[in-house]
Image (cartoon, rainbow, N blue to C red; front, side, top):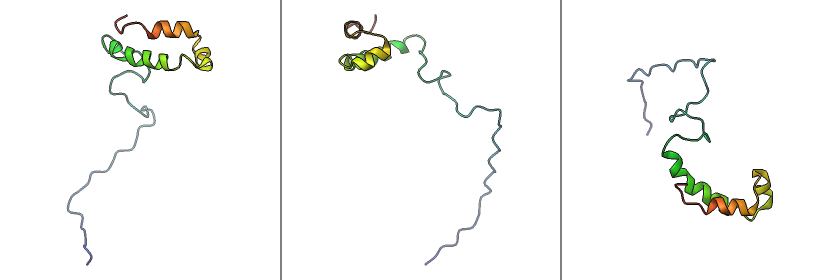
Length: 82
């Protein structure tokens, strides 16, 4: 059995993209990776410090960051509000 579908609605055409318009938009108004203002940065700190602790034994990654193992562990051990 086949079903014939007819166009019962009028679907409006999609307007052409403006070549001068940016290709993506951020809902927060900041670019990804940019520091967020205010208390949002407090929420990010524990995750950043866990990641820093995780790479503390990788000398290649620490060298890329310009940190020693001791500096990375010292920063990772700080409480989130500092």
